[in-house]
Structure formats: C-alpha cells, structure tokens
View 1: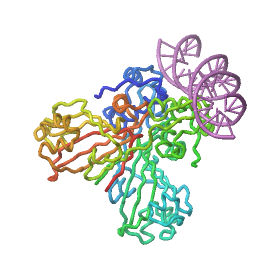
View 2 (view 1 turned 60 degrees about the vertical axis):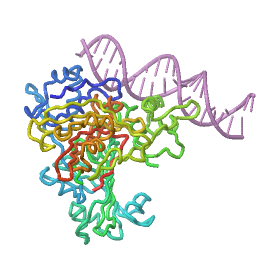
View 3 (view 1 turned 180 degrees about the vertical axis):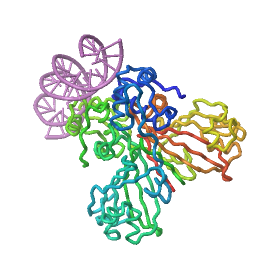
View 4 (view 1 turned 30 degrees about the vertical axis):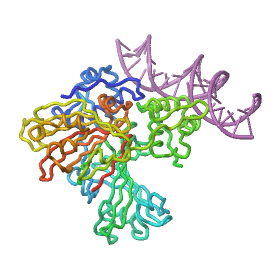
Length: 245
Length: 245
DNA sequence: CCCCATTTGTCCGTATGTATA
DNA sequence: CTATACATACGGACAAATGGG
C-alpha cells in the first residue's frame, strides 16, 4: 500500500476533481481489484483528509463517467477498469494492435474533404506546396468507449478513394489495401501530453481537466514515399503505450 | 489563427487554470513568437469569454512558474518557451538525447539504497525473487528546469557501485561504463500520461493539475541480459517525445 | 516637453461555487 | 437540511507605467 498524500488546496483544481482523478487512477491500476469496489466514502475522506461530502462529489463525477455505480447499503461498485495497451512499432496498426484487448472496435468517419495541403502537411507527405490531399476526421472506440480522435491526410492523387473505402472497411490499413497499397511502415512519431480542449472533451467523451496524448505520425510505403500524415488524440486515462524499438 | 473555443464552467477546474494551461500550450507552440509577448489581457479576456481579472489570475500563475513576466505599460513578456524533444530509440541516452537543446544538464541523486527486489522489479531484471538491487532516485533538469524524476533499479551483484559512480559522473551511461558495461540497448518502454501526484509536483516544480508522462523502461546489455529497470516521470509540458522505430 | 493610446496594477462591491461542520 | 468560511468570477473605476507622436 503506497501512502497517498493529501490533496492540495487553492490550486485552481477543486478537491473533488483531484480526488476523482486519483480514484480513477487507482481503479485503472487495479488497487481495488480485491473487492471490485471503491473503499467506503468515510475511508476515502479520511485518506484524503477531506469531508465526506467532498468525496461524494468526486464519486458522483466518476459515476457520471460510467466508471463506478453507487448502490445504497452496499458501496460503490467498479463498472470498468484497466487501460488498453497500444503498441507503437515500425508496423503500427490501430485495429491489429488492440486485438484481443477489446471485444469490439468501432470506427466512425466524422468528416472528409479534399483540401490543399498546409505547409506542415505538405512537408510531412513530401508533396509540393499546395498539393491536394484527402483529409479524414475519425473517432475510434473500444467496447463503446472512445479511445482516439484522428485527423489524417493522404495524397489525393494516389489515394482518391480513401473516404469511401474507410467508411466501408472501417480501417485505414484495409482502405490502403483496396487501393493497391499492401504494406506500409511508421517512419516517425512525435508525442505530446496536454490537457484536452473543449472539442476533444466532446469527441472522446471526457470530463474537464482530462489528459490527451497527441501523436503526430507519418507512414510511408516500402519505397519510403509518405502515404499518410496523421494527428491522433488519445484519451490518456484509457490507454497505455508500449514502444517497440 | 485557430479559433480557440471558450473555456468550460462548473467542471471542477477553475477558469483561470484552464486559461493558464491554454496560454502555456500556445507559448510552447510558438503562437506568440511574432511579438515575443502574450496578447493583452483584454484581448485574452475577449478570446476566452471571461473577465479580465480571470485572465490576470491565469497570467499570475504562469508568472509564478517563471514562464512569463508582466511589465506595466508594455505587456506580458514570454521568458521561456519551447518543449525539449526527447528521442526514444533502441539507444536511448538521456544526456546525449538532449544534447544541443539545453545549455546545461543537471542531475541530482536524491537517495540510494540496496533493497530486495519486488516481484515487479525482479521480473523486469530477470532476477530470482528476493535478489538484491541498487535503487537510485534522481532528478534531472535542463537549464535549471526539472525535466524528469526517476527511480531506477540495477542488479546489485553486477553493479555494486552505481550510486557512487552516478554521483561522480552525473550519468547512468557513464556509471555503467565505469563498471565495465560499454553498451546497452532499450528493450521495452511503456508510457502512460496522468496527473502528477503531490510528490511529483514538488520534485519537478510543477503546479497542481500538471501532467506527467510515466515511462517504465528496461535496458539490457548486448547479450540481452537486463541491466536497468526504471520508472521515469517527465514534466509533460516541458517535453515532446520522438519515437524512432 | 506634453499629450495620448495602450497596457498592466489595484481597489471597490457582488454573486456563485466549493468545502467544512 | 442549515450555517459559515473561503475561493472563484464578474463588473466597473481609476492609478501607474510605457512608448509614440
């Protein structure tokens, strides 16, 4: 048992939210696996050095997220727990990487269009300035929980059918295959962690103060020509990343 | 100019803190590089849809961090900006990876001891249960800003002098070399992003609600024998990670 | 030098949210 | 449920400092 420090006051983050974050972390760490329940409100209040009402506010927030369910007379039951492990390697594939960890993978195309590449996108895809690219905005989920929101760019000349194929097949890898690209590799990944903005809170069904991990990545075909540049925002508290070098 | 969404109310996270987080991100993204200053308080208040006083609270927090400095009559100057890029590859080296990005790298040994390996540590280092390991607690900084806090474990039988060497040489790589290990490679890295706990806030000089990236990694010698298992907490808003696969 | 627009600093009061007892 | 204390957020007004005509 790790001695947990008292929450901090006057930091701009309400005590109930700090406690909600700690309990969420403890749940995903498996600290409460022995009972399958969160400790009683009075115990948590003692542990964090706050009033029981404050703990109740925190648990209400977690119940709102669907993470726990309070049952009068019994306690607060844990409805969901662990993080999904997402492997990052030279052959990173979203669906395949999650295989076995979730029963059902969902993918939803929110929007798509053809646009002139910004200087950032053109540089990443090694295209001339102003080249046309296909932009896809998607959200992926595991067992109904949103895991990531992505904006991806593909060279329009080479992959004109990305949007249509993605909708039908539900996977970038399959959409590539349907357009004659059988294999591709990850050439670069940059990662930053930060607080979610309002749009991400909504897309990923997060609560305020939540963390997203933003990954900027480039995939290329086996000849080294870039085929995809994407910006993926992961719901940090639902994911763990394993880097395979 | 990206249209920035209004901050959200009644979420348990104070508006001034949400705004501080957004402005910190904008600074590190270089959004204000043209002037070297944060926009005027009145402009920020309009942008976020809040009162000027609320913006002032946010800027006061950033000034407290040393990120900006307000000058009456002129504006709020940016004192520091970008994130340090930390490369993760098969040959990840802390000091070498940061080379050139910061003028001065600091490393501090907070504590060291010999302990019996926990089951987690023993498994990672491929040691028999109960084997003795050297535990090092360190904090590393760039140009005076704490960047990471690490707890590292080494097989005590093979590297009995880790603590003494580290203090003298200021680097794990050099401490290894002084004990006859010339080369080692990263065999696994697991990454999680979460809110910092009270201890991490203190060690890394962060303000409440801050994000840490926790990396669990194993290094092994060229024969594949594990030589180090470590748990490093990075100050997320000061770092960017590049994964080289 | 003064004048003036801009920008930060400080003060007042008031309403609401958070936390305790 | 009540009552109390403090933090947060707003609105307005004015002072103080800066830099450019």
